[in-house]
Length: 50
Image (cartoon, rainbow, N blue to C red; front, side, top):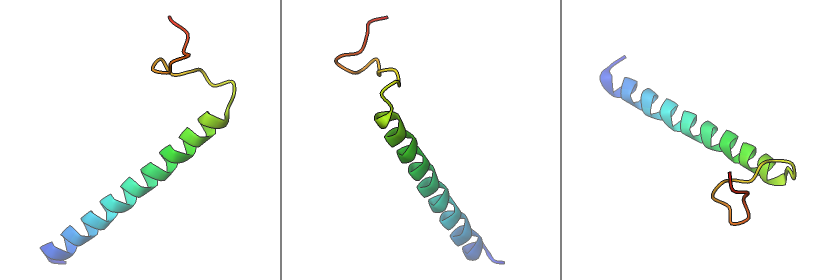
């Protein structure tokens, strides 16, 4: 395996990992948005002061 093949495999693996991370993050965010019992973000306008 020469260097160019290794770089191609590493680039594709990194791309796949980033896509998987983004999809998991998107799913968690959507679940949290649909959950009425989830605590509000401190950045939200109607968030409680702590």
